[in-house]
Amino acid sequence: MNNKTRCTWCNLNNPKYIDYHDNEWCQPNYDDKYLYEMLILESFQAGLSWECVLNKRESFRMAYDNFDLEKVCLYDEQKIQELLNNKEIIRNKLKINASINNSKIFKAIVKEYGSFYNYLRTFTGDNIIYETDRTTNELSDAISKDLQKRGMKFVGSTIIYSYLQAVGVIYSHDKGCYLYKSGSDMCQKD
Image (cartoon, rainbow, N blue to C red; front, side, top):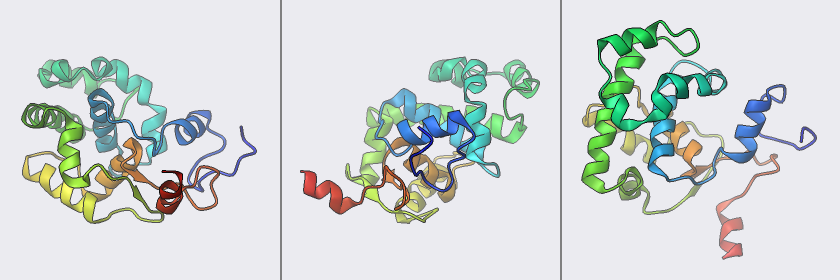
């Protein structure tokens, strides 16, 4: 497993990170439950490394009722205090409050579009973008701007770009990585 050349950001000393890189990152997964979990986790990344968030992912799942959207939308002050006291997750009050607020907006988007992926498709046109060495692009700018207009927090363009990579809308494995593909590679297979 460790003899493969991976993206330069992948910490080869962290099995969770290797597994995430190899089996999840940039792999299309448009299930609403997954899209929701990743949006909440990415919002906690703001100012931190993804590795930090990933290492706490299971603790986040437990703390956030396995990312049950309906339950999170109903979180009250008592639950916020419980989250703030949970040493196993990132205890940032602004991010915790934003996660609950963002959950309610996510739910409203799902109601409006039928699924969160249907919402994303209004921006992507069902296309996968193949690019490397970027932290934002016009797509992440547009989605970020719209989500902020709807009232979401911690969804700047860099966070949304990272989110789009995580869920497979943007494919960004480094050119030296064994998982690298370009858009032209994909066209040749079709």
